[in-house]
Length: 215
Image (cartoon, rainbow, N blue to C red; front, side):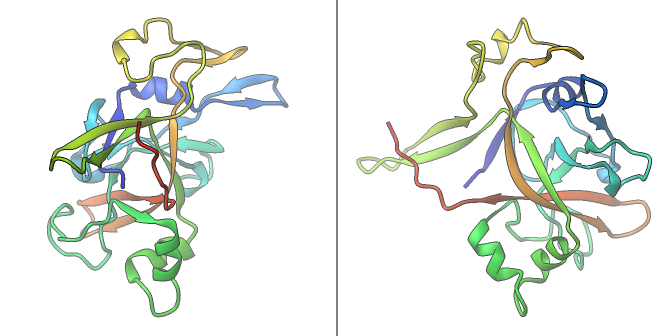
């Protein structure tokens, strides 16, 4: 299960990397970046993002404003906060950063989890953005764990595991994004509102039951 992510790009480059081609105007368009309150926390690039920190999230812009773009990037806290929780957003005591897809389908059914059912029924689907995430292999001969970096297939000889090498990344309306190919993770999001001041947008990553082939 994903426990650490790498999000090294700045907000503008996440917009660039999520560009899409507008056939009507014959050019690439970047999604709008919307800053959310999130209890005063904001997105900060890091090679080691952990649960409860802020990550870039791609979501339909109509969820925030009728005048918003077709899609937007809205940073959210990684990990769902139960709607019924009172107190600090990060201290609800549940592991809610990931859930297997086959598990959330059962938990969100009638009589299942209250945590997952509401966001799914309300259509709060989104995509968590990162360059990659870390998966640990437990070795049989020792108790040590070896981290492996999981990322998308890259183009133009980009070394996504070496941010220092991203010197020639670029974007323009004619050619679009030339840079690291993002890893896009299916997710659901929710809004936790303990009071009118402390509002928190948060997401849960959905994972398939993958079988890794370690090399």
